[in-house]
Image (cartoon, rainbow, N blue to C red; front, side, top):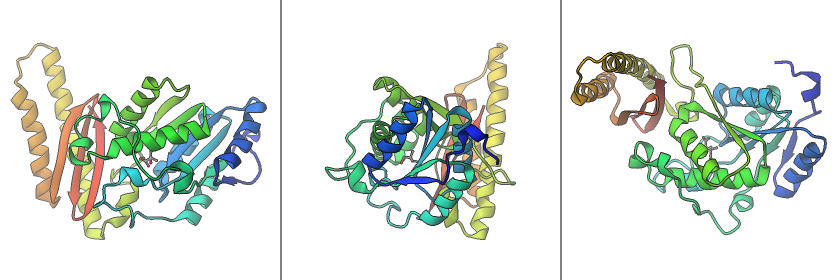
Amino acid sequence: MTLPAEKINGPILTATTQTQLRTTIDGWKEQGLTVGFVPTMGALHEGHLSLVRLALEKADRVVASIFVNPTQFAPHEDFDTYPREEEKDIAELENAGTHLIYLPSANEIYPDGPASTLKAGKAAQGLETDFRPHFFDGVATVVHRLFEQVKSDVAVFGEKDFQQLQVIKEMVKTKDMPIDIIGAPIVRDEHGLALASRNAYLSDAELQMARQLNKVLYQTASSLRAEGEAIQSGLPRRSDDLLAMTDKAKEQLLEVGFDKIDYIESRWDRTLAAAWIGKTRLIDNMEI
Ligand code: PAF
């Protein structure tokens, strides 16, 4: 992608401390430039780069952070083995047009030691929280801390983590933070699989199975849409019919080889799912 001349800012800058971050961002603000922010945990793929591109459309300068946040992992989860590919990530962020990469140490984010000091709001209830109770408090804490440090005008998050996006929108509203939160569409591979850093854990055979998740979700969301239209047109429907649709989806996933389904549920305007293949947990969602 070629950037318009006014967005080119020389070679990519990096900051590892708040002081370095502020020097650059305050300089931009003095020039009247707007700032977009893309927080990540690294192990980047096309989905992350699409967030950077969207941020470039919304702001004059784009900051991306790479920080594998310890407070959003439970002790039994994959914090230690989470893929870390910093050099490759930096090169890809630079190619996508990022102006500044923030690479904080854990101490820069958690000077008093890693702990979730913020409680996520109502959007965090159910779905992910039923299975990862620690998760959204950790996400809300780190995102709040990063927002305070970066002070961008907008921040972009992927719609793949749809509940996370709602949690962050709610947090910004509750805390009255002056930042626009923008959701970016899910990026999928040619078979419809939502791109995710944890897809790297899948073997070839598991990848084939994983590609069924979006197909089953698509069918479920389509059936629910038809059911919704029937309800709107006044046809009688029972709530067990709706439940039967998500139950059928769960059965289909188990039949193609998924090991465990955490949930398939409809909320907001989406059908959302989390399911396991071996030790890999996949999430996805489809608009109804
Ligand atoms: O979606 C992610 O990658 C992470 O949850 C986030 C928002 C960067 C916070 O650590």
